[in-house]
Length: 216
Image (cartoon, rainbow, N blue to C red; front, side):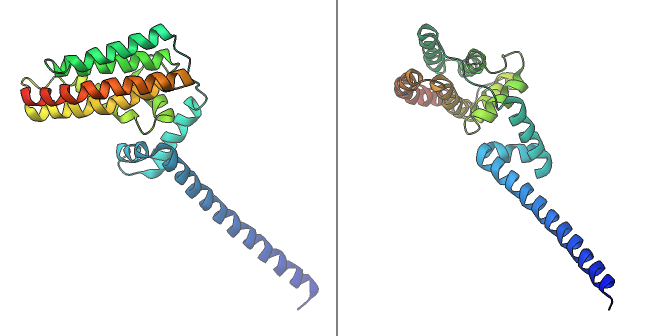
């Protein structure tokens, strides 16, 4: 075999090896990106996959786009007076759950939307955009907001059954975790206040929600 042929064969082998390596690297990058999104979004990743009918690539494009659009957001501080007002309003909503579960959940939905806007997320007039932004920064808590919002929009129930009341109770309890995260976000004072608020709301919520279910 001539030296020219040997050089040609070597060149061909090098090109093929480079192409195979590039394909393998792309596969690893895609897998790494998916794993990174899974770690970042947790249960919200599974929700996105379900929303896209099991298409993980479409779900990951969706989640990646959310990060690009909202990953730069930083929480704005809350004034102490505003912080106290939000806490008081949430406690009142929980107390109202005893007699008016749907009204209480609607108030929780409105309150989270208002609080998120105050903290620097898209305002309450753009629910889907606000929800996407919250999912980037509070992926493990955002589903509670989704649940109370859906319950608020649901006008099909004409009578309040025990099952309905239990679902509303669960939605409000889950939404409270996002409320507390938003209250705590951004400064040490917020973390201290949120712990205090959590202690108060847990004390009240236990009795309120149980009574609400019993009377539902």
